Length: 260
Image (tube, rainbow, N blue to C red; front, side, top):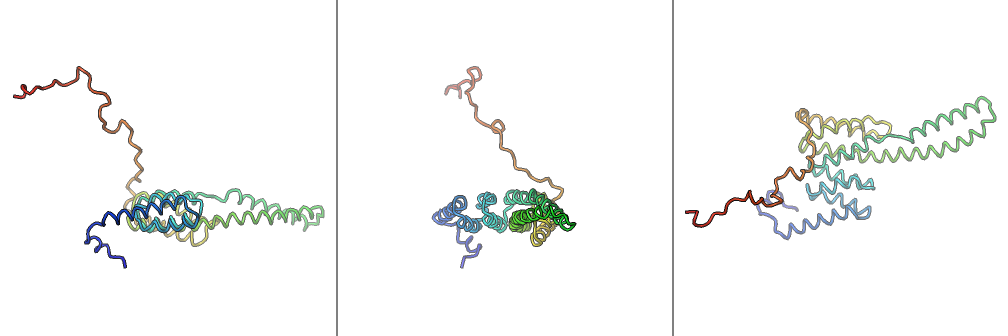
């Protein structure tokens, strides 16, 4: 059984060897998350949560991983860590999913329905010349319908990531409300109202997360959302003189006899 935090604190600081081993374990997991195989990256994303705030940066980067399950595991770990620095990468991933639109596959769906309906209406009215065209359109419609269906199913699968992001944001707001969380409420509401691409569970969790964040941050709505400070310019920081003082600006040298 792991000792409680109180017992660990009373026993004094960890020995250097323990700190070294912990850092080594973190470095291995972070490297595995970046370059490992698919399954190894998923495991690393789940393992890194035990390192707490130290793991926020690599887990935030993993939200852009090409594998959906890695992104889901990273979002879950960030929520369980509860560090406010995770709001920024989680917000980017949320906006990317919330602003995704059906696009071309929705347009194809409309074309398929219109073309098939026109062909079958022509057959029903007795236009024999349209029978062959209707057969071709029907076969093409089945193929295109399969493609469109795959696209919608893929978007529904991405909804699992949005559910995990919404859950993590709600956890972070409970751990420590921050003004920047309120800026994500419109994106959560956009997901909760997207009945075409998101399933009922994703919409419900996003709606509940938006309500919870609004409630917990209601006292902070008048505060400005903090922005990341730009890198300090070279001239903004004090620095030693690049060149020594000129001959006329040098102070006179004091001899030992003058001090008396």
